[in-house]
Length: 120
Image (cartoon, rainbow, N blue to C red; front, top):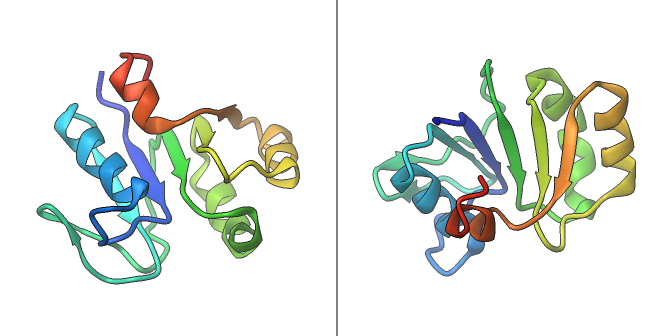
């Protein structure tokens, strides 16, 4: 099942987990939208440095630390994903509470592990 996914905190650096997540999501057949602060490519997919207006998003997978998330709150809530996935190191009780108030499910898990174990 294709789960349209935004990877927030995407990086053009191949050694970063966000880069690997975009690659593996794409390889697994998911429609993936990398959004980050640096321009670049992940394979053939361009990183969007803005706040793209997207709809029908299943998951936003976070790769931004809590200290960098606050300016993204309005964007995350406006996209209204079904799920907000907090990868290790991105856990944020304030954002989790906001998501809950807006009917967005939250999960603390690693995107890469979920993909590897067929739980994505």
